[in-house]
Image (cartoon, rainbow, N blue to C red):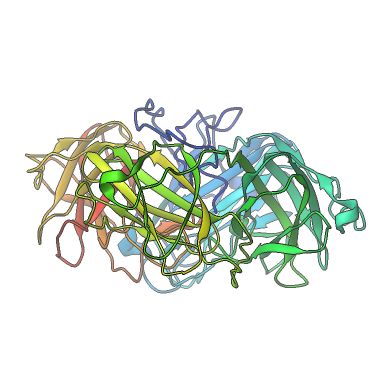
Length: 567
C-alpha cells in the first residue's frame, strides 16, 4: 500500500498542495469530495548551463521545481536547494511523462542522485526499477540528516545518446503522528525480537533496517479492530553507494510474540502492505524484515487501526428488495452461507470512487487462508447487473470501482460453502468528482475542467473526451488518468478496461504533448507504483489549453470509464 500520497506540504520547500490519496484510510468514510481549492501554480526554474558539477549547479528558490533537458550524450545537470535537518522530502521526476517520444527508447531512463551539502557524498540514488518500463524513477521519501545546501544530479541510465526535456518537484512530506525507531542505524539488539519490541501507535514510523536485522514493534488492541500496515522503502531508492534497494517483508504476529497471523512481501512494487481483523484485545507485534539478508536502508511504516464495531446485518437480506441499507464509512458484521446471499444497498453519485472491503472475522493468513471468504460484487440499481470492478487480492481485500451514474447500488456477498462464513464488510468512498458532459470530442466543444478531477466514459469507438484548463507561462501541470487494470501493483485498476491515452492541445487542436502508448508500457512514476497513465506539461505561455482522453486501441464501451485528476 502507498503511504506517501500527495501530502499537504508546508515548511521550507514548496507551497501547500492538495491531498490526493490513492489508498483509503482505515477510518475513511466520506473521502475526498473533489472540491478542494486548487494549489498555487508550480513554475519550475529553468536550468542554466553549464551546470554539470555541484560547483556550477543551478540554484532553486523557494518554489522548489526545476525544468531542463539532458540534450546531448553524457549530459549531466546539477541543481542545488536548501533543506533542514529532520525534514522528510519527496523528489518527483517528469521525463517520460513530459516528453514520451524523447525518452521512450528502451533503457533511456532518467536517474536522480541526491548529494549531501559537501557536494560529493551520495545520500540516495534512484537506479531504475525497470529501465525499459517508461518509468520515472522518483525518490518517494527521504529524511534530511543535516541542514544546508543539497545537490540533485540528473543523468541518463544509458548515457550514450541524447534524451530529452524533464521537470521535477521537491516537496516536504507531512506524516501523521511521526515516530522514530529507537534502534539507530548501525546498531543491533534493541528491537530485534518481540521481547524488545518498540511500542507504537497509529501513525507513521521512520526506521532504519540494517543487514540481517529485524525491527519489532508492539501495539495494543483494546477492542475488535481492523488494522492495516504498509511500507515505503523500495521506492525510496538505494542509500549511499549501495546498489540494492531495501526490499521489506512485514509479519503480523500474535500476542505470544511468535505465532504468525499474516505476512506480506510485495504489495506496490516490492513494498509491503496488509490488512487484518483482530478480535481479541491484547498486545500484538509487527516485524519489519528483509527479503535479502544484506538489504539495508531507511523505511517508513504506516499503521492504521479502526474499531470493527458491533453493528450486524439484519436477516432476511438475501434479495436486493430486502437489502440492508448502509452508507459510506459503514462497518458491518455478518455471516453468509451457500444459497443465502447477503445484499446491502447504498446511495452513490457518479464520480464516486468506491472501495468494498471484506475481511474474515476468524483467521486470515495470506497465501493459505484458513477461512474462506465470501465473494463480493457491486451491482447496479436493478440489483442484477454487475458493475465492473477490480479486486486487490489477499493483502488488503479491497474491491473497487468508479461509479458512472447516480442512484442506488448494491453490494452482494455470496458463497458456495455449506458452512456459514463470518465476515466484516466495510464501504468506503475514497473520493468523488464531477462528470463529463457529452459531446466533448473537440476543443470547440470541450468541458471546462471542474476543480481537481472529473469522471468520464469513452463510450463508443473513437470517442474523445476534451477538457479545457488555464495555465500560466512556465507552469508545470500534471494529469493522471485512473482507469486501467494491470499488474504493477495489487492496487491497480477500478474495473475499467480503458487503455488510456492523454494529449495536451492548444486552441487550434495542435498536439503539444502526448502520453499515448500501449497497455504494456505506460508512462508513470514510482511514488504511487500504480499504472496511472500520466502526462506532465510545461505551459509555453499563459492561456487556455486542452487535455484530451482517448482509448489508444480505438475501442469504446460502458466499461471504458476513468477519473482524470489534475495535480
